[in-house]
Image (tube, rainbow, N blue to C red):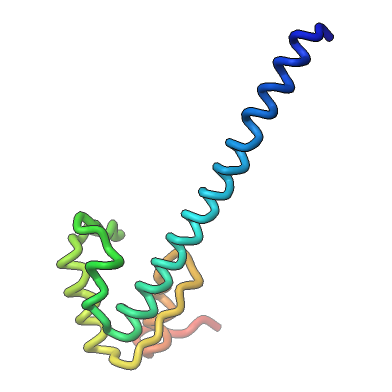
Length: 115
């Protein structure tokens, strides 16, 4: 290999390696921060009813993209307050990527349980 090309490749690798490592570290950190914020929202707001934390954890232009319609932050919080009023001892554990409404309806006896 031409010594100039070899030197250019080494220089490129030396230059790009820290950028790639930094990108991975910051990407992972941002992802971890997002997970922690989502977990805090579920635990503090949904499970404990601490709605005063909404401004800290949600963007003002938050939109909940639901299956049948979208909700603004105010509409979403009103719905959450309704859920919390109906089920004051609810504990929500954020482990899944979707709300399991079928299991909830089965647990409430509103739909037959799977056999």
